[in-house]
Structures are given as structure tokens and as C-alpha cells.
Image 1 (cartoon, rainbow, N blue to C red):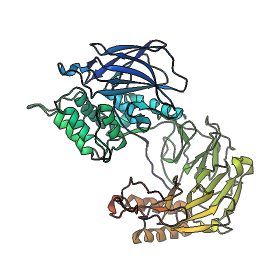
Image 2: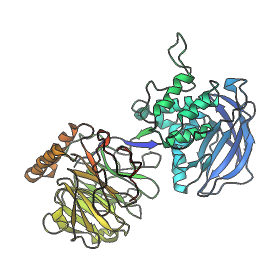
Image 3: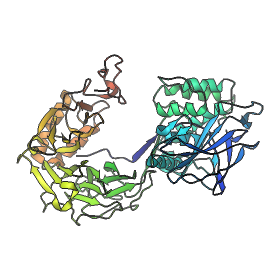
Image 4: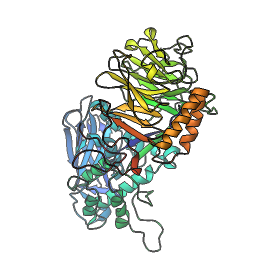
Length: 584
């Protein structure tokens, strides 16, 4: 089967608190500057904090001088797992001389485990800090597990240069500056934040707080709280914040541009205040399934390779690994090769040793790399003496067992405890259950009751069987042409259906199934791709099954075209692509 082929996107959230410029003069001395709209903020209270899994620890506090500069001397060094951040509150913005102290100023700069040699802090560093740390922020406090905090801080430089307070590298590179709206989204957010920081109009802060009030909850009272609200609810009435651009910075008569402190700004309201970034490199091309390891690195099997002419007739892609900040860790052109890696698919999993398990179309094999990209499988991969066909889904169960699907021959492969030498083909085609209940099986997942669920791309049902006894297979009705499958924390099963759940989808499935029987999975994939390319939004669907296999109320879901509601009793909400299920 084919999958979405595009550049990997990272989507982050935003929040605000004053950015502080810092440069360590010694191991425990920090120097910096607080800015608003590019001008100093005098007499701001600046606090250095150490964030960890516990409540943040205050390390030092001071005030900025007339030039917005400050020096912090910490009497104690942070612990090894801590991440440093600065908060600046209040102060007099010199961009609006005579405006006096502004108690609504609250800005933040997250600098990570070590302090850069020099840092300038402004609205842009604030946005970068809050969007990356949104899930760890509670007011001015950052708290979370060490890995999460390290990943969040590591992504701040993707947006902003902590030394200059200007743009970071990735957000300016050709993939993002010209191919995403992120720079304009980011700068517009900085502009409206700056409007309150500098009191660009007498009612600037009250307007910002009103525009940043969430659907539920009270209005914010400072710029940090406003930014956090926007970061957590980026989809909620985004036009309210966008309208402030004109309220704060109308185009002067006879001029062309708004007198904003940061550019480029948006011309039209966004659908949501999100900050997507694209990343490439490391041999990445037409990625299939992706999976994270224990350090937050992303592994992905590539359908094709850089420089090759992509075609279903020749799958030859390698494996790519990205760091949590999007930096490619695999070789720039070839990616990780060897071990039978030829044409990655929707099969990717990472075991407890951080070994990456990937499945292949080109070599019809299973490939395993260690965490450094060294192949652990033979040069031809694991093929069971050539018995495997085109391969797809792979999972690592909590027990350490590895299960793999073969889409072409309806195969189930099992590696007890992930032992490469002990792997075996459990069944194939109509030989035995659960394979008898498969047809072009695509992906699989294991639930909290140790039961494995399998999506079937040539059937209108999913298959479920106990991991302890695969012969006890059960079927549950779904839509047509199942592909992705996942299980949430409540045990509900989510299945994506490329042909949807209506009569047209049924007709497409019959046609696809006939092609699978007459021409094989590879040829039928051409029909699948052509059909999907002609579909409009809302043609597909998502089925949600309860743990017992019964449909969840409102399932199947068909996006914004549908006007049905999810069944949550009183307070039912209109069906959206971003809905939440109620407790069972």
C-alpha cells in the first residue's frame, strides 16, 4: 500500500513571557537584556529558574537597568537534570517613553541545561519558549520530566536565535520560510504581544486579554498567560487575535506597510495559531511509518531514495533518523542502509534496546538497525528463505515480542522477545487463523488486554486475536480499505479508512479487491493511489470501536462534512477532527 509522502512536519504550541538576554560571565553569573519591540525595558524584575520534575527552583533575581540590562549571580548551580529559564515581569518599556511601569509584562526565555554565551530576550524568544513548553507550563512555572524538558528547550533555537533575539535557523531555511506560514504566524504573534508590552494603545492589554480568553476559563492578566492560552487553544477563534494587528498597527495614510516591530506579518487570519516546521535530510524521501525511540529520536522507513526516480516498480528507500529537534542523524543522501533495507513501508517499531524494526517492499524482508544505524540483520534482511512477500506493519509488544504483517501474502510473523534467531511465520493466506481473517493486512496494534488488532486494506473489517493464542480470531465491522490503526489510553480502537464508509467506498473496495485477486497487491496499489488522488476532503472516514468491538457513538467519523455529534450525553459537541472521546 502507499502512504502519505511528504516532508516530516513538527507542530509546536506557543505561549508568552518576557524573553531575557543572558550571557554567563562565569559559571554562576548571567548577563542579559530585556527588550520590548526592540527597545529596552527598564526596571523589570528578572528571575532565573531551574525547571525539573519538581516545582521550579529560584536560583537568582534582580532588576534590569535603564538599558534593560541585568546581571544575575546565582549562589547555587542547577542540578544535572534541570533546564534553565528566565522570567521578566513588569518594567518600563522605553519604546513608549513615559508610559510608566507595565504590570502586564510577563516574558520568558527557556535556555536549556546550559546557558549560552550571550542571549538577547524579546517577544520572539518568549513565543519560541512558550510554544515549545506549552504542555509543561503553569503560569510562570515550568515543570516536567527531564527528557520532555530537554526536547522542548532543544526546539527553541529552531524558531529564535537566543544570542541575537532574531530568527533561528530552521524557521528561515528554504523549507519553512517559503513553504509554510510559520514565519508570518510567529511574527504576527510577536507583534500583538508587543502591543501590550509597549502599551501601543491605552487599551492594548485589555484587548489582548480579551482576544486570548479561552472557550472555558477566565481572561489572562499578563502576556505570559495570554500566550499560554493561545498556545493551548490555537484553533479557538483565531480571528480575534488577528484583528489586533489592525487595531494596534493601522497602515499610515500614504504608506504601504504597518509599523510593526516584527515582520513578516499575516495578511489573512490563520485557521489556527500553530507553528509547523518542515525538516528534511538524512536520506529522507517519501517516508512511511515513523516511530520514536526512548530518547525522542524519530525513525522512519523511506519508500524511495534521494535522487532516484520514484516508482512502484522500484522501491529502494533506506532508513532515516531525526533528532528531537529535527536534525538529521542518518547520512545526508543515503540514510542508513544495509540489512536488507530496500523500500521502507508503513512498518516501523522500536524495541526496548532502541533497535529499529523496519519492513520492506523492495527486498520483501524485515530489517533491524541498532540505535546507531548499524544493521543487525543479514545483507538480504530476514526473508525466511524468500518466503516473505511485500511487508507492512510491525509492532513491539510490552512483553518484548515482535509481530509483523505481510500485506501481499496475508502473513503473520512472530519474534518471541524480539529474538531474531527465533522468528517464524505463524500463518499465511488461508492456511490457518488469524490469517484466514486477513486480506492485505496493513497495520496492527496491541491493547491493554494483550489482544492484537489488525487492519485489512482489502476487507471491511478488522481482525482481533489474543497474543497468547492467535488462532482465536474475531472480526469487527469497519469502513472500506482500512490502513492506520491505533489504540488510545481507554482501549478504544481507531481505524482510518481510505475509501470511507459509504456506498462509493464499498464500490471502490470491490474494485480494489478484484485487482488484488487478479493482479496482486502491487498492481492494485496503483488503482488505490489513483482513486485516492481523485477523492475530495471528507471522502475517507475513521471508525472508533470500544474495547469490546462495538462502535463508539458517532462512529464512523467523517470530518467537518458531517453534522453528527459524538454521544457524550449532555454537553454533546459537534463532530470535529479534533474532538475528544468521553470517558467510557
